[in-house]
Image (cartoon, rainbow over all chains, first blue to last red):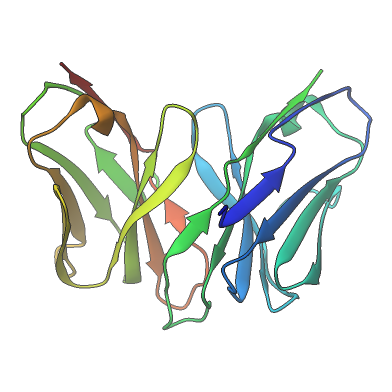
Length: 116
Length: 109
């Protein structure tokens, strides 16, 4: 039983293309996240949704647009891909968010995006 | 300077050795996470703690809030423990995790 799943696992595409990465969690969690891990393995948050509502929107280009059709899904759409977008993108979920309610995060397997 | 610093950056040890990885942070936090990233790339949450100490199998995590410092210990280390260990903090008044740069651990049989 996969708790947090992402598709595709690998994505190779050319500059200028538009692509989407899908994420689903079957844990019944309220909050989902997108993280980017660069070539130096440094993780950084991009977005967070709580019950389909955007709560964290880091300084990322507006070519990146998250979409949450329901609280079990958080997809990431990227327009006009650039070389610098090459990275591993991780989806994660947690039971709840909130200032005092830190909770354990469960990560998906990652999507390795390569832009050529 | 990153808000979360880990040391060492790289650690190689013999099987069976006791391992300590350190994490220091510069802000007040509501929680600290230890994560493990396998060579294959997957990330697993090991611990989340806001005070004291937690133990799971051969892994122990401690935190000293006053000193803004946490340690992850591995007893009787094994080659399968080889991974990158990442510390992440949740600052007060903030819903975003801030990550350290990770410690690459290699256990030699």
